[in-house]
Image (cartoon, rainbow, N blue to C red):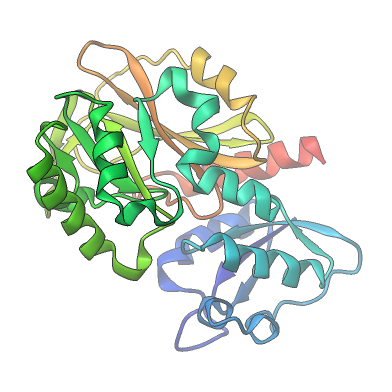
Length: 302
């Protein structure tokens, strides 16, 4: 079992510094590790990107752990590694499924805020945008793309206090599009804003942090639960994970994350899913335990 990490921009023999602790944890847990060039991959130079990844003698299962990839770049990585008899845990279709909210929304809609989205060029059509935001009445909403929000620019490019105030909707959506720039993923997503239990304020951005957890699943089984934020006092929160474990069985991915949060009415909800290979682990999370559990549970499945 192998974990593929990004190498350093400055030295292909060294790991990207942000993943050094993870690589050590993976090796201690019994994984083989390899490095590849993220920059070459995203430039479309697949063979060059993988030139230091040794071919497997027989087909071998692997996990990528690194920076966010587009579905296109992930597909290049997947097929490039397959040529070396190394098979990533999620196919390109499975990666895209947990990467884009509209793909997985039908499976989680009972446990997540009401959402709608633009398709194709509709993100430039204000008639469509106004129609989508009309569905929320005068409730507060947030705007994001299929993958990410500008939550660290909360007031100016994320939170819309009243969906019926079309002038303000236009102002915030335009600012969101401007800030995302060429990194904007596919289209716009509008989501009903839910009041979540306050945790603390982010020490750098001032964004209100709420009580959230990141759950990681492999082959449908929960392998680790992390506090989402490194800041704030989570206390002795007691979680009933049953509804989330049930939903996890329906998700078309072998390795994914599920972020959940506590609402002010004490109910819990799903914020979003993500592919487990590109999801960050909290700085203060126990990476050793994570990789030990990951290896154990994958070993039981294959």
